Length: 546
Image (cartoon, rainbow, N blue to C red; front, side, top):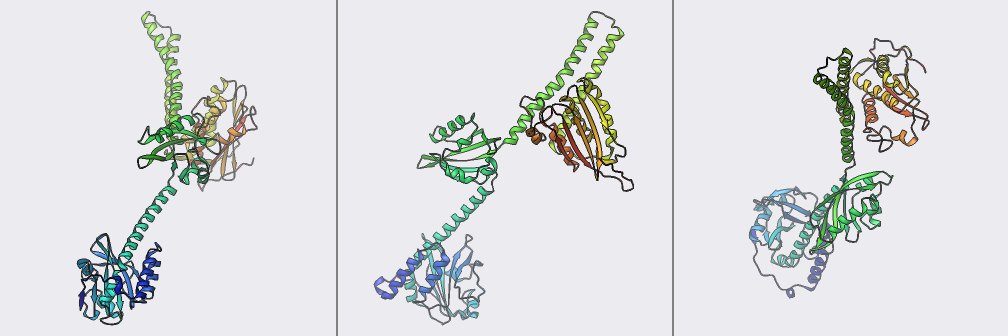
């Protein structure tokens, strides 16, 4: 049998004094904590003093109104098929009846099986039930469900008693759910902040940081706590040439001169002393239309800036590299046109001279373009290896032959020292040629009236190649950074600063190692690299000691 009660709540005066005290205690418990499970357990203990039950649960309607789930369940009621956190269909349930009529529902005898869960509860020893609706802001959000091992136990007096608790319990549950949603959102927000590679921050109008993401340490070298301890928007880190501009941009936001998103670039000085480029996007934080601070994020754009610089350098280098052969070709064309205009029958010598100018400079243009394209492909790090059997000794001899004239123009002697027995290796011939050729070119560029020697020897399972010169040498700082991309000894130094970085890239592609040795300025340099030996198993390899 099922009873649906519609009634007027009895006044407090009808309640016994001890029940009033219990109601007061329960209401205090309800608002004592946001931990609803803690509240539930304490409330259950108090309810047992006035309402006999063997099973107590709170069920809540899910976002899908066709389902409900058990939110909390009596801890001492262990043996049940109706579990916490499991969703059940509303149709045919006691919950459906409670929601439909917005009134308490009593089941006098679960053996009659009026609701889908009655047989389950009857099997578990529950013979009567009371479901009480939980309402919040005019909407039924769930129900409190009592179960007793006695038939026909629950009555109007139980309903009257619980009516003085239910509104507060419903409010506490909604507050808990809201708190949990906020907590989840905060955790997601915190995860985003902590995992972001960019600096995410918030600070007050007077420059005090309220939020600083951990990524700030990776980008600036300073931990986040140092920013919390100091005011001033972090302007002290700015490059001295950018401080005034950054401060001006921030003040424009704070003074309301620019209320939209601002995006600008500036430099900071890393803790280790080098320059870092940042892109700053910043917005005002408002409260009641008053600007109380700023929020935004900074992105490290140093690599992009270096690439921009590389592009500019490459344009300059290409212009310089192509200007001379183009000018000489133009000169040859002028000579040819002048001879035709004057009706000269050019002597054989002049014709040969013009032809030689054309041929040499066209070849130079072709080589320059090829080198630029090769450099571009290597720098992109997508050029695949094309290994073949190559002789390091033959390659060195070829380069010495090709570069002798270039060396002699600077009064240098270019030679090689190659012991016998250097094995054939598996490598990309074009890349290894470019590697050795670049090292030799560098040696010629920085040596005058000196010697350049290319040597090779075998160590265990690697071939070691050395390009040694008597040129201007390298100091300790340059030795440490010479293989870095974009590094140049001085800003005015010719070139893009990528040549040796490309050499390093080539060696690494071949699983080798490259380094430089120098005793200092004016004492020459030794650029060395190793390449592993990949030899046919049928071929006998002889290694040479030092």
